[in-house]
Length: 347
Figure 1 (tube, one colour):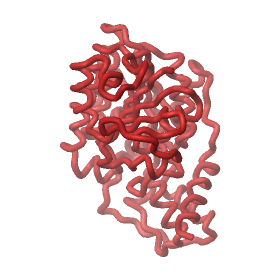
Figure 2 (figure 1 turned 180 degrees about the horizontal axis):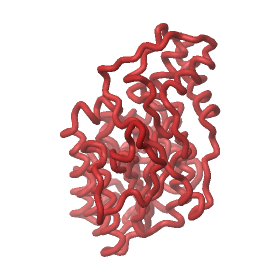
Figure 3 (figure 1 turned 180 degrees about the vertical axis):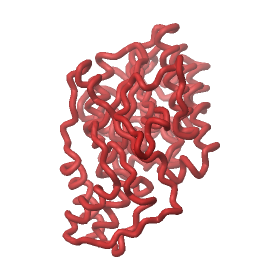
Figure 4 (figure 1 turned 45 degrees about the vertical axis):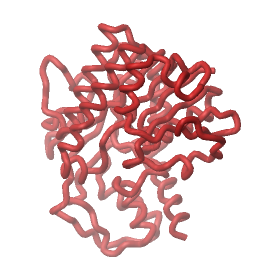
């Protein structure tokens, strides 16, 4: 039985990856989260807790799901000291060597967190530095580093000057300024991924997801927040900023599909975009949700709220050519799934 490791395994993307791996493989999944933002697995995993081993919670009939509630940095330090840490500490047979690592642990949130507490977000630098130090020592089979669209230069995302961002727009020889400390940390993480692949022979894949969303995303993010307010028929309907600012919204199922395919074909630490390749404004998202709700509210702009860059969307030509991949879930279909979920929750 292979053993995979998922950091940040109870956050939005992490828990979806844990569920996907559990459903699509017969492997063991160790997932780690300090639950500062993530949700305890008892609320989403759909499997019963079988037992505990030295504080690790084991779930599922075949005991393939192992949850550790801890700061990933603390765990990494123990893993650096003992290469067979999981096997010896938790008696997990065959876990001395990790097959695939999915590194979602990060301090991030909505725009309020990125703009409102940039030094807290900067701690991602320490998480990633300790992660790649362990990666280069342990050399797992494959490693995923999720970067972000925030790593792209902000001067390419302005009102009147926005372009479809392509992978080559990030050039370590001619740097642009990324979006706040979150963008800087992800840019640094990409560079560490490149170093791990080139100098230490580690198989690393980097992804730059744009505005991912899904049915189980929490209300600190704009899509679920807008969906919930539409389901409640808010009137007037508030929007941060003018609402004309736009993003490239991509459903979590498409993000996971593209990620797993990329890990099969990209090993050198290079990064790919994951998005629809389409710019959609927040006003358009509100129109869509209120159409589902069957009403036409007055729009109330909140001009004192943080909005980030004016327009951020990606060029997907490279991914289509290199991986033969395109997103399957349209904006309308994905948003309808989110809306229906919120209607169920408030009914």
